Length: 90
Figure 1 (cartoon, helix red, strand yellow):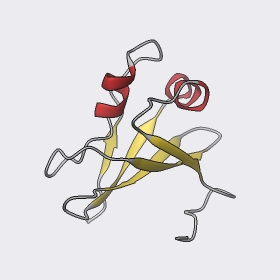
Figure 2 (tube, one colour):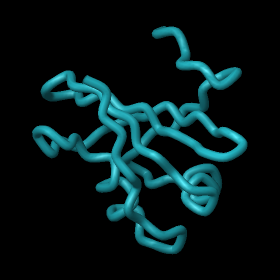
Figure 3 (spheres, helix red, strand yellow):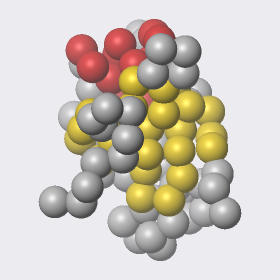
């Protein structure tokens, strides 16, 4: 089942609140990293829970993408997808 959530933070919010927007919707575990795909009209962050292994997407608007690009929270690693597709696992 594919789940898409909506990020709930403002560009000026503290890093802890920004990182909390990516918590697992099933077990509420903190996510350590995410893959961000920036689109022309919509952007998604692909997340995988380190605790329960569930995966989901978080929809982002332009201000949120800018915040993640310029000042990501220190506890969340942001990777950028290539060509609008999910990257191949390293």
